[in-house]
Amino acid sequence: MALIFESKECARCGGTGRHSYNQIDGNRCFGCGGAGEKVTKRGQAAQTHYIDKLVISVNDLEVGMRVIDSGDRYTVASIVIENAHCTKVYSVSNNLYVYSVIESVRRIPTKEERLVLIKDSLAFQSTLTKAGAVSKRSNNKGAK
Image (cartoon, rainbow, N blue to C red):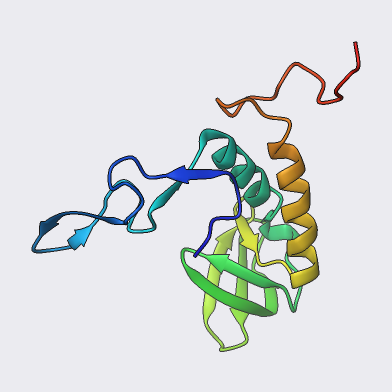
């Protein structure tokens, strides 16, 4: 799978995704997880920018939202506020998720939202230095 944000060939495996063999993991490269490429520091900062836009407070959850929580993906079917400190969320498949009111979850964007967020994050990536910090220079060429 191609990475969305800036990446480079893995130096450990030379882009093959394979490295020395061991009995537990076979010959999968630990540098890139077998992908053959790694996200650069600029790409990592842009990826963090993208994910940060998806994180919402439990208080902002709405019925019908798609959410990721600890690897579980679910659609919110109902929300029950137990008290000032506890919120219960039921998924469409009737699983129960209990949250403190100060917790956050990551919502799953629609396809349209995802495209807009990727475009925004790629624009943000273009303002970064190689080290992943915001550039102090303007990206306008010819401007003095």
